[in-house]
Length: 385
Length: 115
Image 1 (cartoon, chains in turn red, brown):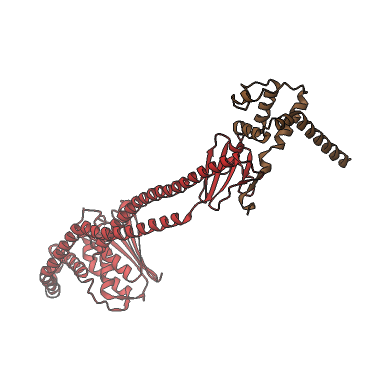
Image 2 (tube, one colour; image 1 turned 180 degrees about the vertical axis):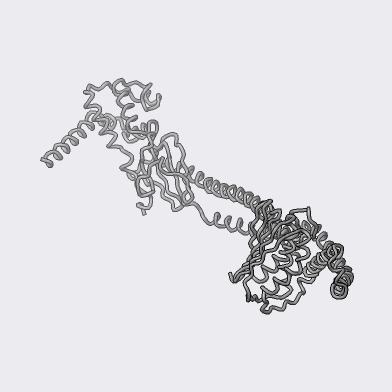
């Protein structure tokens, strides 16, 4: 799966799963509250039924001529009776319970009823029993299982929907990759021929070497060669075997500056080098060239006529600063994506910074980009972090 | 001093109890009308001691079948009680004593106390 495809799929799944689970969560919550209310009401109904029993017993007691009147005290519930002013008369709580102080909560069910006529003087009765938690615990488990099953179901569904969602994007990326593969394959021979012949002309016909026409051919060929190298790098990236060896960065940097000299001269761009010698990095040679080439190529490409480039190589970093067009703040995050070009005034495929980003992340380096729009940009790669 | 006060209260209550039996309950006993039953009737209708007390006071002050707790057919068998010549304060004390005597709370027990 391609990186961008994976990213889109993850984004889609996060949005899809979050919204689905939030909606399902709300529905489950409503279901839970409704079911819990039903359970409580059912238990309350039972208590109401017991209240009718108690009332009948109070009537019997009221009519009884016994010296001692035995107030009902079943195990299932506790009860108390109150006069018209809600003063406590008697009850089975074992203590005086105030009529208005007791209400149904998460643990206790309370049922209150008016009594008429006032058997034993009672105008109100209060019944209470602990809430049967078993049914509520079962409901908890049911809702949790529902959430779990729905979570699994929606995850699977989301994955397949996501694949469908990114399919057009995958198709177009594959087509583009295929096009690049075909293009690089077809460009290989002509570019090699042109570059070999330029070298031969430089060796055997030095008088032609200094003409403007020849310089332009040389610049165009080098630009083509860089594009070809970048595209080949991307094409082979997954199967590319890296040979990580100590690479002298100062020497490689000087070589690449010489290589780009003719291109820089075509725009009258001045290159200032502040290079510390003997800086060695454990890196694949081709990776080092790709990073330097891309940063240098961009610094020239997006520079102004008669602009400047400052290259600094120090123990812990390489920095390439240009006086070019700069990058808008909102575009800074986008520029590292493949095929992304925030400025369309210059040609290219938009793969340069993607390659730099890939190399930097492979070696656990850090790429810092700072830019002021219309003033210039600075790209710094830090190692030993 | 405290003991004397308690003793005086005790004597006073007993004295009142004797007056209650003499002035109120004696007729009920003679006519075989259980006072407990009458109190239950008051309880069934008025619920609170204050309301019962007011209802009894009102009836004793002006006895009439219309305000009696007993049903009207009762008076075809038993005559309406004669007007009592008792001071208000004494009457109120006697009513209080009557309510205390037949207070239902004193007779109520929890069912497990029976076992």
